[in-house]
Length: 272
Image (cartoon, rainbow, N blue to C red; front, side, top):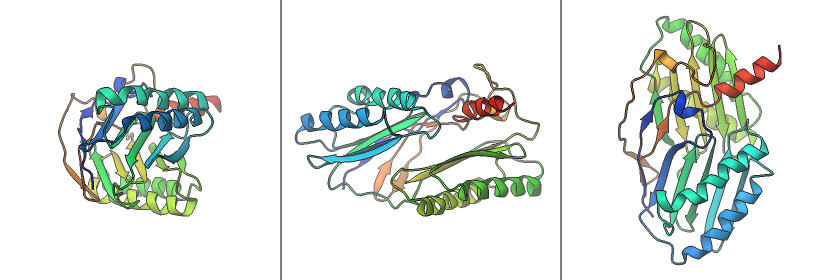
């Protein structure tokens, strides 16, 4: 089995999260493709597909690849996001690695040579818990539970919603059915509750889905191009984290929650 290596970095939440194509993390194997020229047409095919649908997977010449865009993106924005990644790969990983995954703020693209192992759908890959905690633990936990249940029962692969100033985002990989997606989101929500307890914001990434939430005890702030950071303002923080994921050692970039709020507020504003 190959080794996938990533560097994990916490970034400030507002300005860096504004661009859909900001890098969140990269994962690069330490093995090489026998014929790197076979990769280019496969990735080009997926970039073409991204102008028509938010998720696709394909296998060519013993290489499997897939991309996914965040569920609120238009087809044009999806393609713009996915199309950035092939050009980034040589600088991020090299042009001949046998497996790689590049996650941008609004999309990811991954590929691997046949023979690389894959973790179970509900394997915890990464968690990030906000530094602030809720003063009213019981009230906060009840709101979070209600919001999570809404996400679990959303009936699709992408969900955004809110319950009493607690915003939640959930997304599953496009290969999952609705029932499996609900199970995956439920597992992610349980991890968030267990791992992050009373933190008022968190992100939990599993192999095939992720959940993010953020609670605003003093009301939701205005979202502008220079939005105030979540949790009252973070200092720039960096840390390196090592994870054992299905036998694959991983490090990765992380960007704090709020990637979807701009679109959520836009939708809310349109309803007025």
